[in-house]
Amino acid sequence: MEKPFFWIIDDEWADYEREKTVFDRAFGADGYELAFSGPKTYREDLSRYGPLADAVLTQIDIEIGPREMEQLTHCRILSNYGTGYNNIDVQEARARGIAVGYIPGYCAEDIADYVLSVLYRRYKPTAGFEEEIRAGKWGAAAMPEPLHRLSSKKLFLVGFGSIARAVAQKARGVGLSVSAWSPHLNAERAAAAGVCYQPLAEGLADADIVSLHLRYDKETHHFIGAAELARMKRDAILINTARGGVLDTNALIAAVREGKLGGAVLDVLEQEPPDPRDPVLHCPGIEVTPHISYDSEEALGDLQRRAAENAVHVLKGKPGADLV
Image (cartoon, rainbow, N blue to C red; front, side, top):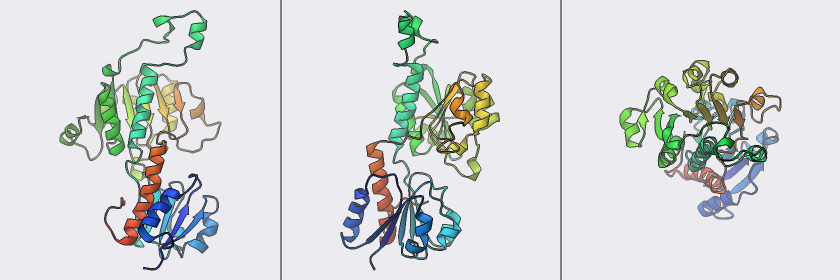
């Protein structure tokens, strides 16, 4: 085959040595062409690089729909840097014979660590006591509310892919009771993974912590809304590390402000980055982190490498690519 042309649309990585290593191994150091664009320039570069590209590696916030694909006349794969792919019109890509790659599970361990850190901060805090100590409070008197062991708590996972499974494994390891629901889960499959299956409504009502792990698409938009939040315990907490759109943020704010829900920790929002005036940033009881639950040097290394490998597998016609 002629020299393959790779087009990377990204401005997050410090360098692209991991991708180059994969491409060098597959085609030789001089056996391919490589071009770069950023999120602000890729549309300007589309007419230049689009017709040349055999593979496009792209961040998950780069929209690629019919108009963009008209220029991708030789493209064989759109390889996303992430587990999501709602930025790509998959149906249009399929009609044009373009594969769509994604990276399932690359940050499963990292998100599991994040969820566990949320639980420890809530149920066994180790920071934030300065004011109480200065006021002369010591021992249990310094605690704003009674503590409970993690082993006394029930965790309910909404969605049960590779990330939720990693969360379940770590949570069970520290003693939590773990149950799960997903459209494709049943009691037998759940038991094989070491968790209990619960119907959605029952699991929401029974849990002390609800952690969301759904993919985001038209079917899951605002999947957790006012009705679902109303089923939860008044002292329960909600954790969202999936996508902002699976949760109705306005309904969440109302539930927390009205005392119908104990609180929430959100690593993803419906608008990212948020407007500083966004009410979700100013609601006591809701903590927001800047979409960092996936982040570790190991995870990012896997992400870059596997996105490149997906592209290479498709161009070489070899199995092993993670494709939608």
